Amino acid sequence: MTSRDETHLLGDEEKQGSNTRFDPELEEFGGKYRSKFAIGQVTIRCPETNPLSWIAIVYGFLPFIIPGGFFILWMVYHRFMGKFGFLLAIICSIINELIFKNLAKQPRPENTANRKPDGTPTHGMPSGHVLNAFTLMIWSICEVALSKDAESRQIQVWWLCVIIAVMLPVPWARWWNEDHSAQQCAVSIFLGFIAGICAFVIRTTYFSNHWQPWDRNAAPFDALINVPPASGTIPRAQHI
Image (cartoon, rainbow, N blue to C red; front, side):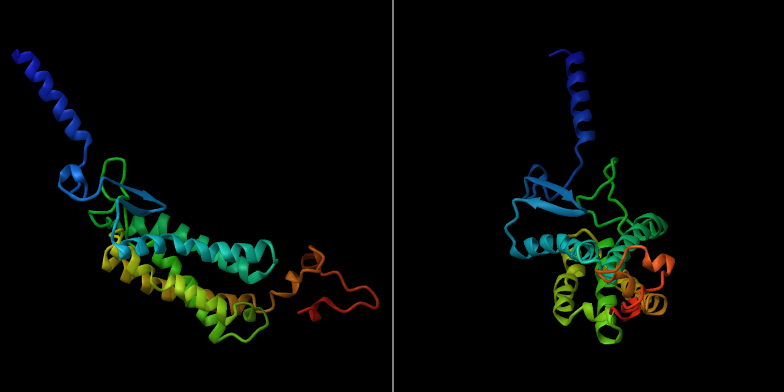
């Protein structure tokens, strides 16, 4: 083989090496996984044989169920609590992704599959999954335990139990799956407590009588134009 051929082969090897990121978890680098990728910011390793890892993966997706339930409560049953809960989740996600993570600029753990085009881990402080989960959980607990108005009764104890069962293990799941560090999860829990309490205060302060316009039999624009009730009909304020 000529020196020119050897140089060409070395160039190909260097090019290939530059396009392959070293990952000790993959088989080609001595690990036990054939592939690793991220879906919805959840790292998935294949093949995975550890039951705890599969539980952590599932809990990475479960937090999407609760905002989805609030969305159905809003759009199908026309309840304000569904609208408030869904928008609360959306607002938390937007603020976290656009503001908090860009301010902290702290990368995720090295073994995560959530990476930028250059191969470096994406920002992970704070955890959006954990922040969203604890914000909705703390808000829901406050609504059931502290609020006595009619609309708050829509978040019944059974619904609260579902929220706690789905949301409480999320920090552990994100840490176990190495998508966030313990510090990132702890900060997210703290922020979730604050956001959940603030959401409850805002809801009870500014929307304490909100359920009346959301009566399923209400005309859609009555709440906006304050049309007086027709003679012989029950005032809208009594439809609770």
